[in-house]
Image 1 (cartoon, rainbow, N blue to C red):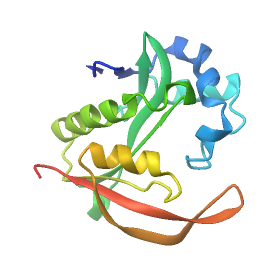
Image 2: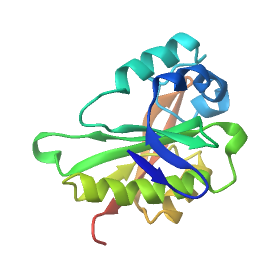
Image 3: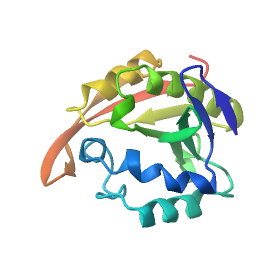
Image 4: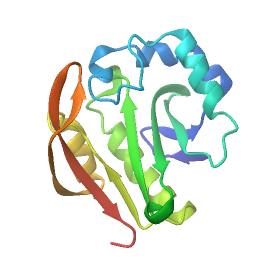
Length: 172
């Protein structure tokens, strides 16, 4: 997969991405806004394990966000099954060096269009931490709407925190 978003490119992961991935992923500020399955510290071994798990996966649901050819973040979705097979959770991260440049907003807009065209989904949603206004702003700029606040619904870094629920509905 390859999508040129002007400010960045979303593409399939490549084996050589593991060389530079830790430079952007090994950052506490990045980790603080992600699920605990994203390791911290983020090592070369973590990068190798990640790349091994996504290269050649079918269906392909995880992608690199690149700037000038270097993987500086990620975007992907978690498909659901059974009665929720029409929904998927979208997630993303970007190396701190690239924050505030509109990169993740451009990526999310393009990725949302891609997902609705390639998967039989009616809904994409995200659950950013309420304490992460930058991610909430990205979602809103990409056309996602707040559906509610989930109070005390997550634990991160030893603290119980609130999450927001944002969704984008296909065709709306």
